[in-house]
Image 1 (cartoon, rainbow, N blue to C red):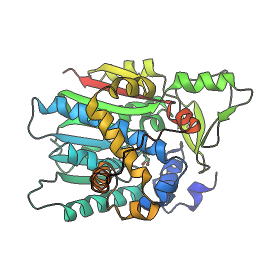
Image 2 (image 1 turned 90 degrees about the horizontal axis):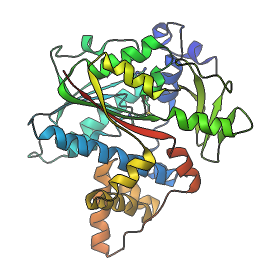
Image 3 (image 1 turned 30 degrees about the vertical axis):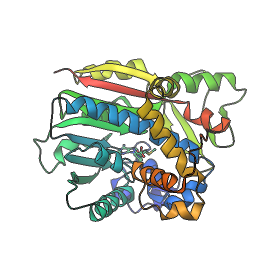
Length: 350
Ligand code: SAM
């Protein structure tokens, strides 16, 4: 897909160095498929699982912040189409800043926010929000904020940080954007592929590639893993490869110290799941999310919104109809795909 940049209307923004534009083009051209289509997908359980995991992580961090603060302010770095908007609403934050490199995604995110506000009850105090299109591995967000003095309690970077590991400078700029406007005691949370897991699977494979019927990872070379710019192609459900980069976690932890960030924890998705599912509330959230999967696609399509809201919807319906909540599980292929990832939480010390 070398021709991508040439055809892009944003050509002027492309400096010619690196892959940012390719990533933007990829996400900009991804079709918004709607809830109905998404539920028919082979990776519906995996999407649900990832959503559950993000909900638990976000809920846990906001609970911690809430002990000290009433008005919580969040930066969603690499917000995409706004898949986490309802999680922020459920967490009762006051203000949200959404940033992403893909302009079309940012527009959809803003539209979703507008729709969410329209649909809400007048007594529901929905957070205020602003939307920024920017390459967060190159541009400084603080220069684009409507209030340059704004401070965040949380920066959430879900499935995004690995795009910045193309070069040291990009990884540092993304980190700076995530952390420089966090208040002391604030958190930087996220999910990213685990380099150990990727390299382990690559080394076990007899080619430059590994995967299954839902995902495929392809490296250019085996045996050499530079700290920055170690590129691989990630293909999910046959959608075109997006260039991603290995994040060597100990280096990430070292780099974060420059911004007074202390690692609170790093857990693989597997560890995180095993630990958190023991909590009854998390388990019941998972059951509610799984409940959605038992309805015919056209019914699910009628459930109005995406994210956690729709699961509540599904639950109330399950109660009304007396249906039992099934314990659908991820297929082996889906589990193999999602178990590549890890969760991280950093805290700002000063
Ligand atoms: N955080 C969202 C979620 O969890 O649903 C979206 C995740 S999606 C896998 C990755 C997102 O990262 C895309 O929306 C993409 O445009 C964004 N992204 C990639 N590189 C970026 C960069 N340099 N600056 C800002 N956003 C970037």
